[in-house]
Length: 483
Image 1 (cartoon, helix red, strand yellow):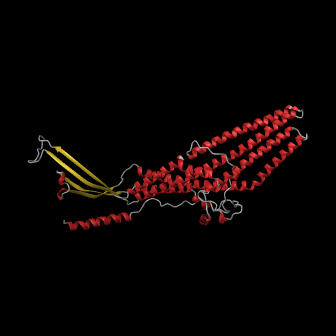
Image 2 (image 1 turned 90 degrees about the vertical axis):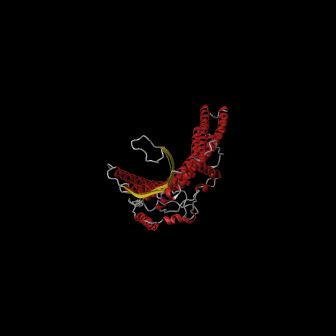
Image 3 (image 1 turned 180 degrees about the horizontal axis):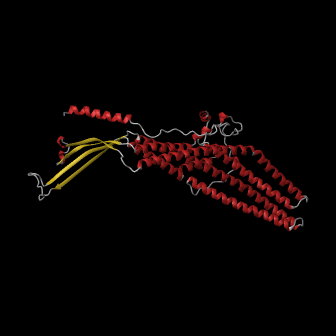
């Protein structure tokens, strides 16, 4: 056989391999998104005051809507330094490395091997050495070898699909971590500011009760007040002092929490005014439920389902024959200087097939495992979507109800202050006892704290809504989501 005969045969073999690879089908189910029975729209939400649907835009950095430089700095530091973020980034790198490793299986692996041996043959064996054969021989060998599995059943393609889905899932998981971290940091900051407001109210109350105690003691000396009224005033003053220390303790703990979230363990945050924080713009009414697809946790759950679906094909492909091509090419000689000469050439190539005849049900069990994991992922996807719908609906309800109650909360506070002023005037005029004044003071103090807590809740519910909708939206997002 001459050299010209070899070239067409090699071309034919390469063409055959390409035809087999291209004609191969991928076993296992192709992915289809599960159909979920959800309402087409979320409950109605109140539009923001003085703003239209076109103006209702929230950028991905939604925490900047509160217009607080300290908050912006805290969230930025958390997204940069928090340990959970670093862990999520490392998990993304790991998933991308696995994808690269999985994809490399679709290409031949070429290995370079080299060896050198020196051996001595026995001269006293039953079969003597042929005349002229050296007792000590040397062999040098260098080869390029390869082994390539033909992806006839799509096992490698399905494995790559699964790895790509795992990469996307890890990226969405990182987005979930970032969104959760930004939300937690913002909520903690609002708690800190609410405690600042409560501390300020309590300090003012304590100062007022100090003044009242001084007045009551003077009245007692003059015979205008009883020892009972003095004791009641002292008790009210002590109660405010204890409350102040408790609030300062809570503030320190929240400050420690912010330090951990931002990676700055000795963080100190100066006191601020909760009332200066605005409630951000709200989404327009009639939000389509398909907006849930934008949530990173929903996207993560779907990519996990895509991966599990592809791994069914990997498992099923193990039930079929495995085709592969192997070969090596190189040289072998006694002298190292001769190893690249034509006479030292060595080569071999050929196809191989492996078919599982008896496996005691091992590969069928692996397929059943993969199908069971796919059903688990599908159930998890359904649960994630349903939970997301409930979270958005809850957040919309909370925002709607708190917005509607603004006037009532303010009325309660104004009424409590008015009642306290009247009680003091009536006490000083001798119409009522001091117990009425104490009750009015407690009511006013409770109303002030409740007003602060309500304001905190109003801000917190707005954060819940922003998080539930995936962190920001725009009219174009809403338009694309609508059927």
